Length: 299
Length: 232
Ligand SMILES: Nc1ncnc2c1ncn2[C@@H]1O[C@H](COP(=O)(O)OP(=O)(O)OP(=O)(O)O)[C@@H](O)[C@H]1O
Ligand SMILES: [Mg+2]
Image (cartoon, rainbow over all chains, first blue to last red; front, side):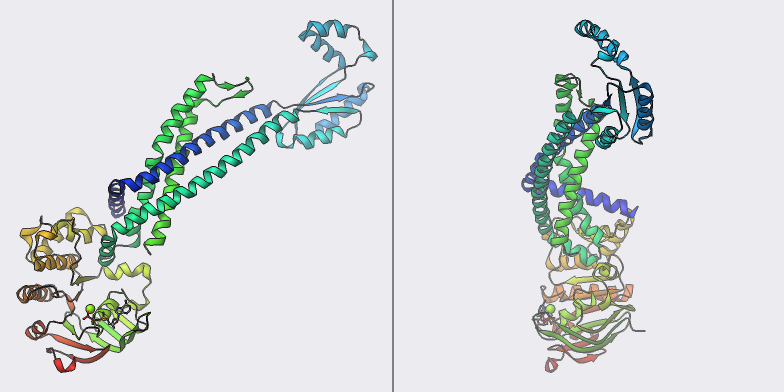
């Protein structure tokens, strides 16, 4: 009960002080706002990138072609070896005949062209299609399969995904760098805002010390003030990112360029983003105010 | 058991000035003690060591069985809750009313509203300011402001009340009023009072224990003492 009364007092004091020093508080709040808008964009982007890369990765398949003259026996042997590889989750086998039929089904052109080839002449090969458990290790698995006898070519969607992911990770790195720098500036501004509050309330703090207020009681209002600054700073970013993302999602009908790049459905995603933005704002505010308290309050 | 004991206490400030030399002192519970001495004799320093604003450089300062010199900074508040302090400059918050100023001390300790109300009104009554609860400090005379400060100091019913020149800014008549308030607190509540002062007239009228300091040395310590010019 005692703690609640003190916290109540602290929160009241914190709001009062933010309003009293509004011009300086406004500088901190604006800085937090800008930072958090960028944080929101970064979070939305990186969650989306992560989402569609895993979607794409789920579809990744290793395609294995066997040598033209591989016998049925030998193919069985290859199958056994593949089965034993720990990263393999499932596989299907198609003989050249099956491949041919499938291709002919898909296209008229293939139908006539492939009709000319029969048996030994066929340029088609027996194939395995292998799915893996861990996509990160797909390269190693492909290399392992390549070493098996009679296996001639191993293919998986290497290039595309890798390039996409590496492009996004470098963008991500730059964004994190900017966010980090902005957070530092924000913290600096908050420290100065809180410093001003502390000096405006020097007399009060002195009296608090005389009458036996604990360090906790003296510190908490200032730390809460930092958190309140963070809270105010996150209002606009939350509104912007929520409505912005919904509009963006609707405008593109839920995907970018092709069906392959699916956007995350706004609900409940935007709530999570809002929570992250709010949390970041409050934590940054708290770090700034704790720093100021440590530096200027000497408690 | 003495309530306050100082054993071989020395206080040397960082700038090299020694304010107190090898001081030994015992003060009984419930007593009313004046600390007198010229300017710079170490009165304020002694008081500051009692509420642990300053640490002695040597020796022990024992208040209510606790060695205050060894108290960690973080725990000083526990000592402060057991004592009240009054200064020459009142140290009231100008934006708060008389009631709020006194209540502030208890709010900092997280007391319940109903208990705060009861204690604040009681201590304002004890200092004779019950009719001014809603005034602001700048609407009061110096003597009245000092009585608000005293009310704030005693609101938590401390065992010890420290006063550093509480009448320093007041004329003789107002000073005597303050002294009457203090004497009543000492009598009715049994609060030990230690008061540093320059005021010869007050010391001589009150006939209490008098401790005289001179350039950081204890020169006299007498029950029912007087302000001795020659010692200073
Ligand atoms: N914070 C400080 N730092 C350095 N020296 C100090 C400090 N406070 C007091 N002194 C010195 O210590 C000595 C005693 O000072 P103190 O304030 O205790 O005297 P006092 O008896 O209260 O004087 P007054 O009657 O003028 O209030 C003085 O020489 C003073 O200059
Ligand atoms: Mg003094």
